[in-house]
Image (cartoon, rainbow, N blue to C red; front, side, top):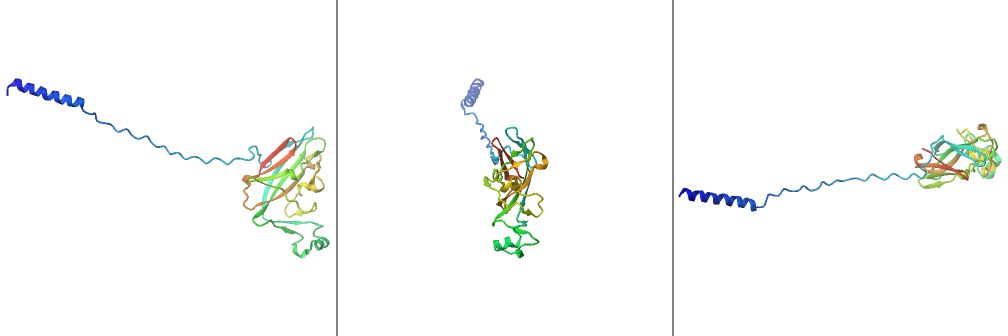
Length: 227
């Protein structure tokens, strides 16, 4: 082969190679799939029925028309039963009227039991007149227990002379007037209405979800978180 022909043939081959490279399909780079982000929703917090509720032993002011006082819920305790005594009820005459016998009492005390599935909750309150004149005290019906969205009224003991074993104060309502439906408190710490109210509640009660709500007067309502 003549050198000229060999050079021509070589050039043709190079051109074919270049042409093939220019017209061929470029290699494709795989696009990575977008990363899948899995998020777990946090459980929504349970709504608080009384966002402004205060803790035990904290005071709430109340009063209108220049008559001022403070209210405090200072203790809450659960009791499966409680023992009580009453000089009138434990007398033979009262026992006979009730159709019961003194032999059912132990050392003069009667045992109070709740309904099946329930327990007793004792809540201790103190209301003090901080002014110079006597003022109207909230009735016990204005003290409402709220638990898990349900409300519970207080349960009264038999009478003003009832004493409960290991409880040093009397029932709140008997400290503000006859029967506790209405009454007054006099000025001064020594005249404070300091007593308990009893609520019959489910035995599974969680005090961290229980509140005592008090309508103190026409302009004040306060709630205490009991646990």
